[in-house]
Image 1 (cartoon, rainbow, N blue to C red):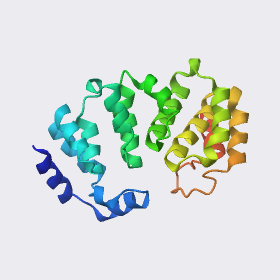
Image 2: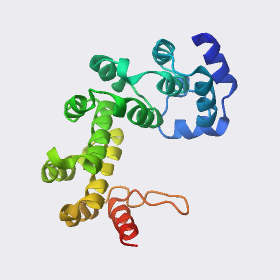
Image 3: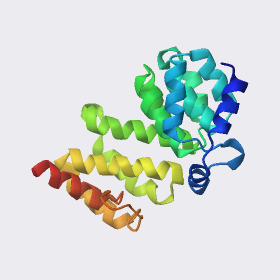
Image 4: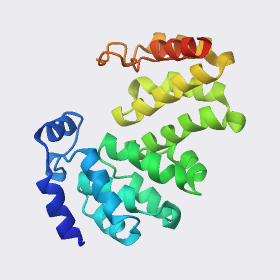
Length: 223
């Protein structure tokens, strides 16, 4: 299928509730159809891996097309500069999260870019950098200075861009959950900053407020 045909197919699958949800979270309505992710996955399954088509879909800057592109591209074929450019213009939290999960975490350049993006002024690159850092805190923290990371979160998180603040908070919570020697400090920082303290959550879901999140996950570990 061509890019034009796929855009028409995505537009036909637009969902009013999904569109409103994304716009509420900062999406540019002119770059959005509002397709349910399940429908995007069904299209991707039919297309299978098609790296060139994925690149062409990404260039449209349409959010739904980018979600589809992420599922059909081959991360190993993306250069560090292609990844850097892509990360600078993600535009939507959902696109950023899929980009991290399906592209960056499969890339040989993830550690190099993680370090670079932690110093970036671009909020989307910063979000990616802290997302990768959060994962490293869980799975490979041996070469991380967790004290410095907590110091930086305490200092920078209150004024960080919304996009960055979310993944900084994940790094804070993951530190407290996975590293008992830093748990007290992580809890203190969370209480001091108070970020996401009143964040609305659905029944049965855990609050993103770091102290609640940390204590809940630690209690599950002990159960």
